[in-house]
Amino acid sequence: MDRVMFLCFLVIYLSLVKSLWGSPLQNDQEGSGENLKEALRHELVQDGWFLIDSYAYKVTNESQNWSQTREICKNMGAHLAHKGIRNNILKLKLARAIIGDRYWDGVWLGFNDLSAETIWVWLDGTRANCDVVRWGKEEPNGHRLENCGELWGEFRSYFINDNVCSEHREGLCERKIVP
Image (tube, rainbow, N blue to C red; front, side, top):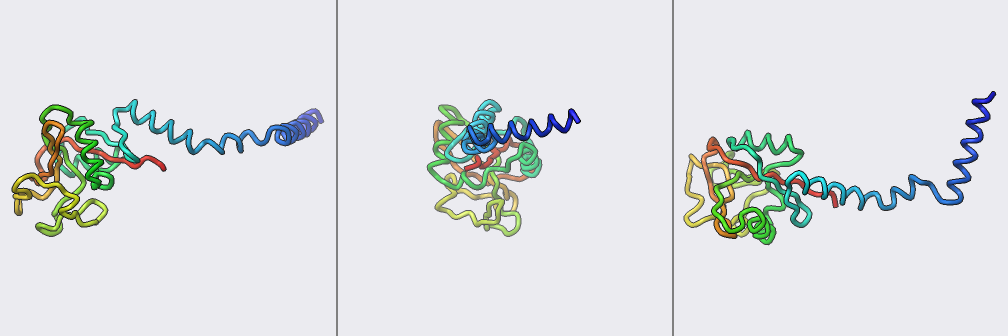
């Protein structure tokens, strides 16, 4: 009997609280989307990610071939950069944030011409157009040998290069920040 009375009292009490102040869960949910987004952004920054526009970027800590680097990004909950990186303004911001005033050896990006020579595509299957891909001088030049794309940097600037996919490079991982 005591247990039944306690449960009845608890139900009445919670109903009264809800009617006076609204549901604590409801109030929490109203701002939870923004709070979660801010918490995620803070966590990403603490973990070494660069936040640019609605994307987060991080250079992997180890050099591997293109396929292995792609897996490393997946294990981080990301992909080799292939969505936001298409925006030339974002690429410039990224180059300034990561490269700074130094020379930067290449990092793998999420595009290649493995399926058809000279047809460069992003990981999502979208064709990589020349107006988006800022190739370096005389690039791409690898013909059948260099089928994976990388980002090179030099003193706050960048360019795209084609390289042999088995070459060991760090990768540029990208993840969309929840809007």
